[in-house]
Amino acid sequence: MVSRKHKLTVTIDADVLNKAKKVAQQKNIPLSRIIENFLDFFSNPYVYCFRCGKRFDIESANICIRCSWMKCPQCGTCGCNLSEETAKAIFEMRRVYEDLLGGKVK
Image (cartoon, rainbow, N blue to C red; front, side, top):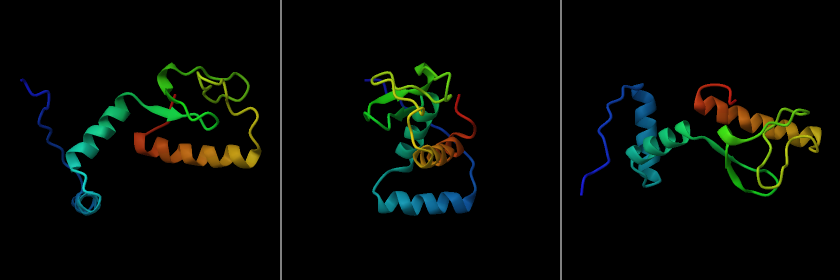
């Protein structure tokens, strides 16, 4: 059987690496799995619908012309019927998501 794994060499800040190693060890997760999961997510990002909970790829999501939010392909929910407080909470969580990906989504 041929391994589909490839060696990756990266250079990152020593403090970030040390902190990540400690947390990964506490959670019993190899750093290689964390990196692989992130790169997989980075190349094919997804979200979960805040109404029905269905996972969907953001690249294939339609955008609502009224609120500019992604529409869930399962239930069609977007941001139009959210209270201002809920919309703000979801928006701020999306900022975390965008920070992790290194920039604006869509």
